[in-house]
Length: 115
Length: 112
Image 1 (cartoon, rainbow over the protein chains, first blue to last red):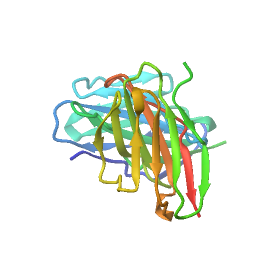
Image 2 (image 1 turned 180 degrees about the vertical axis):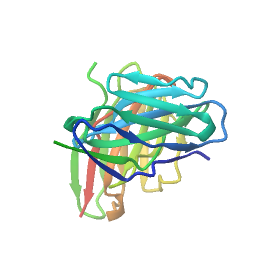
Image 3 (image 1 turned 90 degrees about the vertical axis):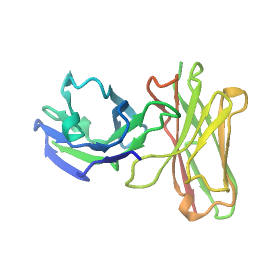
Image 4 (image 1 turned 135 degrees about the vertical axis):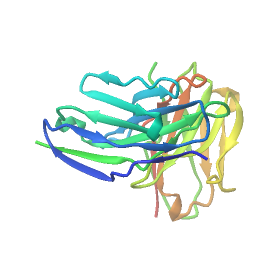
């Protein structure tokens, strides 16, 4: 069975602070995909990143960066110099290859960036 | 391409009534998924179609729930005899094989 744990329920920071959102996953499959989604108050899920299990290279996209470590089954997400517009609920998700490739989501981390 | 569309955005219904939601996926996407999200939780998988075939259903999908995707295009999700526990956001997503989901904005159901 697959499982995603986001231990941080809520985080509050002041604008321009860096913040890291933690994600730990469980799967017995050797081929899998990890995702991060952003859900602003309007409700839609916005895709941020997809990584496969064979690519442990860290990725940076503007103020966003992701650290994938198979040794600790973690896929953490860092926002550098946070902004008020980053306020949202962030979800980490896992899918495995073959079959439906449905997503298994964590419970999400609510990030509030205060001015 | 306007993305994944869901209709209605909001639905309030009385307990015991039937409701139907519609999802229009991205036109070239052959896979369509339904998820349910309750307050404070992540989305949970309900069911999945590849073209018109419903290939997987979650244990969460009780007998009161039925989903269809005629002709492999739009999909409908019907809930019969709604209960208060059905109150949630119902999210639809589509994808082309395994290459990334696109989610719709969801239908928020409130059962009173």
